[in-house]
Image (tube, rainbow, N blue to C red; front, side, top):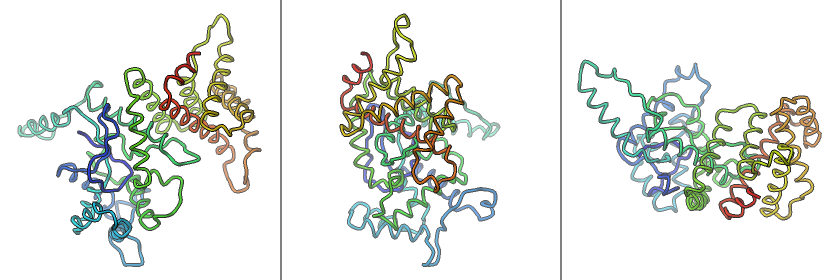
Length: 398
């Protein structure tokens, strides 16, 4: 089994299965090799000499410091105090209360396990065999085929993580992030100063010192508040991952991943997210009977309105229809290069924004508003699909 680092730091007694069908689970590093690999990576990122940070934008907490300065060691004590009622965490922290801070963090770090079908062990044995030949020691290069189980199942793990993230996030303005810190196991292979890992430690520390603070983005750093929701949601997802829906849902996860990690332009994000909604809800119209784009636009608004109203029957349908019209118009403006029309709607969007004097890039925020709305609609579509797939499929086909 291979592992991918998440943003969560939290000791769990046994692995938490996310998907039996896909072979995915949350866990802590267990074997000595896993712990040492994660420890080495953490130590490089958090324990590098100060001179190494002169050339990097990353920041870090000190390992130890005087009492009036927050440090990782003090944060671990705070974590222990906050979790003193939990018998497993209390026992874990007592048994591992050595001076090896990096080893303790490694044992607490939550990883996403995925099934590599024994390929990683095969690579390890191949490397050991090659290294025994002094003439080529350290000089061999292995390139994996696209159909290698490591790459295939690693992609599945990432796609699933984005599906789960959009369903369990608690952010009003969710903008597509996942709970994964890395994309794959091999990100751990070369230790480096990792600004995102250091940020994860920093936010974990804040949670240790402010365990009751309300923060809508806390879901991505505080495992305790998202644990039960992740278990329940992933179980529901797993139940509908059959031959009929698996490829579709993982493709949606792949598009969500693309939108988050690769696409930076809000216009392109909007087009991609609208295409997810179309994929889930619309069918190709009869070219001989309809104006194709007009027909899809009508399907987009009507079918999405049905699901949104089912999800919340207090929603104002007329206002929703106006918003969906704006979103689809913006999608068409971008797709056809009508950027003047696109900017006109953005200007109109700015007039609807509150507290404009508190913001700087008003156009940027206005563009992102359309993206945030699309994420909210996709979340409702996926929840509806999980609850009643037959109805959503019927809605799509008719």
